[in-house]
Amino acid sequence: MKVTLLGTGTSTGVPQIGCTCPVCTSVDPRDNRLRCSVWIETDERKTILLDCGPDFRQQVLREHLYQQIDAVLITHEHYDHVGGLDDLRPFSVFGDIPVYANDITAKHLCEHMPYCFVEKSYPGIPRIYLNVANPMKPFKIGDTTVTPLSIMHGKLPILGYLIGEKFAYITDAKTIPEETLSALRHIDTLIINALRPLPHPTHLSIGETLDIISAIKPRRAYLTHMCHHAGRHAEMDSQLPDSVHFAYDGLKLEI
Image (cartoon, rainbow, N blue to C red; front, side, top):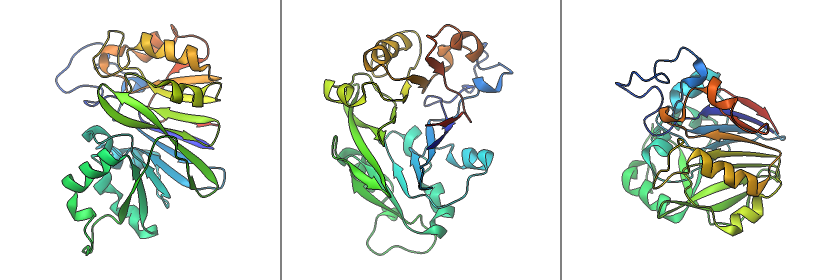
């Protein structure tokens, strides 16, 4: 499985507009963080997109990605995770694109993008259709098993995803139920959110995320969904445990 991190930033992205802090003015490209999204190519060459934020068009142009998308897995309905769904239009030439989300997010998408989910569509709209995903109810994308995971984003129930048996993606978590922790213990690779060093009411801080990683014990973990307060990549990555890394836009992993 090949995994490309399209974006690793929080809702405002980094640099944040108007900010002159050391991170936002850094010349290190690893400190430029677009909104979170991940592109996966499975061993059987199926393509899975995890979230589709407002920077999606820029991200796929940067990475020269243009091929059939076999599934879009949505974590939750916030704009920084779904704002690019309309930019799936050019990919519709390859065929209809199934979108998976929990019932709350599916309802939100129908309300805010009704032109995409009408019975009689018109030419030019994205050819996407919704499927409701439920925690711990696996489904298949080709031969790859996808297991939705229960996550809490403050008081909002959202989804993480276990792809196959080795790779999991969690973003915007604040708390993670024991059922989900049990499903993830000793996996190979975990990507998980870590907003900043200081606590936040709806997102894990870096310290809280490290505690969760210690409980899950993956072979390796990568931090994502980081705001400018998370610090500069070169400094912060060196302070993490050997098996934990600051992710960055364009990072490519082999699972």
